[in-house]
Image (cartoon, rainbow, N blue to C red; front, side, top):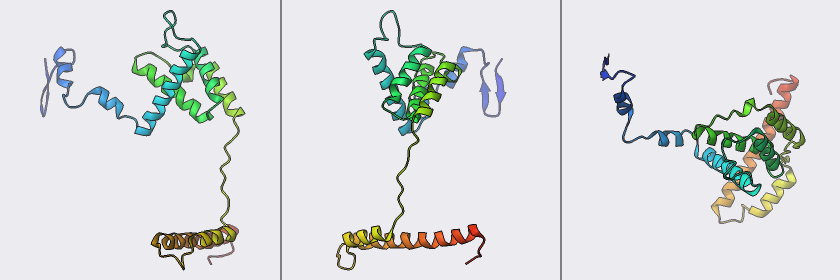
Length: 192
């Protein structure tokens, strides 16, 4: 017996007609799955899967007697160790998630978080990978002078040079003022 809703009848959940009524000709489930990730994430996942396939082919892990999927924990451990030689810890994890996603797309169960030896390998990679040190040097008067010498805004007919110089000086002196205010506030010196 169909169920009655305000917008019409919905077929009984066990009937074949339910799957037909859920089919929408303009939107496929493949399209919806494909748009569930941002384009940059899709590219990262594709790169991870490509590295996984290449790794398996180069090391002879794929053949008639040994299919690519379902990947074993040992294969994933070797894959992670191999990746750690060339990419960061974060990228290793992303590529492993891409492999997990590939398995799930093809209905193969793969749960990385339940692979304890793989988790230990990842922990080792994390501890052995040096922390990335971002080079953030303070802007000094010497740097401002070098920018001024390069742009020469007072002699320039190029409006871009003048605008850049204005932006650089505004930012430089604005950050100086902000630094003074935040230092005073942190020390409890007063509102000025």
